Image (cartoon, rainbow, N blue to C red; front, side):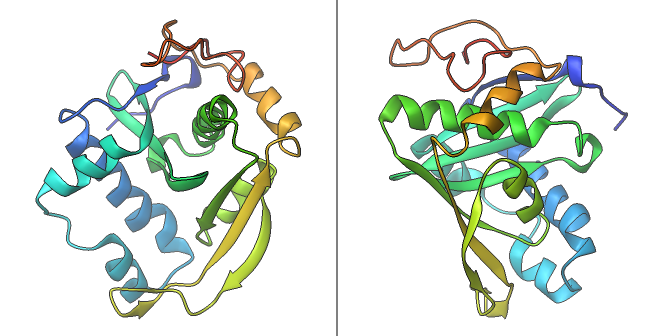
Length: 203
């Protein structure tokens, strides 16, 4: 796949079932390429799991969560999930658009939804590769999880959180990112402007 630039990236809600395969491919690529620089091969295999799976369960989890998708002219390049009472369950960006602010914008969209729900904070379990990005977005480490296991293999990560008022300055910078989004209220009719002043409202 070719390169992409910031102005070509848009953000929207997850669409079932059409986005299932594309988001799963981003998940696989992010782990097998980006995370492979900081985890051992056996840890990567355990975390990523089999590359060919029945996407029915994957699609169901994305539908049950508040899932935001980033895409450019070549397809889906990232996604993030908000579940429960403020857990950022997934945040994955395709390696070809790494370092372009896509993760920041996805978290800003998740933060916008958290504000709409009246949540006081966001929580996540960050990998070695994701921790620096979350720290730049105002998350702080609550606890190390050196014994975290996936499919019987230890894959260390960190429990992190961000109180929404503490992360305000990080969210506001999302308005300076060179991305665009189609203007539309969310599925509940709420205008989506707080976390993404520069992106418009998510369709």
